[in-house]
Length: 284
Image (cartoon, rainbow, N blue to C red; front, side):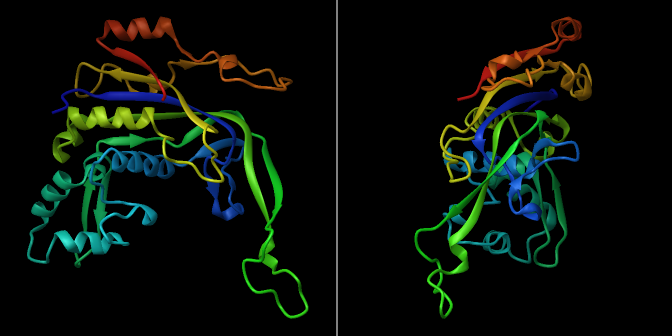
């Protein structure tokens, strides 16, 4: 089992893609009140679950188009495994054993008049861009009507639409693994290696019209192993280790390399004396 705390930071480069559309703004890329781009933690966990499934692991929260067991709701998937006579502690134990995403992220089961909550050890932050993002909106038309046109019309209204994308942006994601909760769900070192591989290959098999192949890429991953269950330093201090240069606002062709992402070596050396270990990985 995992016997120490883990923190991680990874960066995502976005070039001409919509990393996470906001349904409240016509599916435009998410931004905060200051114009910085966001990718929700739910979106990132969805992609991690997809990668777990691609790697052959059974997951509970499957996307509808990825359902490979014939169930298209969480309730039906739950009811197929558990009957009303099974006690809550047995549900928790068997669910953690069967589904990897529950061992990792936890889950709430509001089925069969139950209310069972499982807290998962893996936490993922909302991704934030390091600079405000520029969003381009492109008007698009279909060459054929999706629905029958109204009388007197040659085209239906659905032939007109719009597409939104981020011209360029780099996002930072923070995460951690709590070994106390890992002990409860059974999330072990083997699962940890799967999580690491899922982060490295986050956008593999994630192609869509909003995210063309190669438009989103995990670049740098910093993996921090503590020597204790509580941690050698706080997660807040770990987040502050990541440094980067300022991008030239007049740059016509921004590049990831221009940011020069790195860790604060002075502080890192201090934390290493406390026992912290860091591993630098590259995305796929």
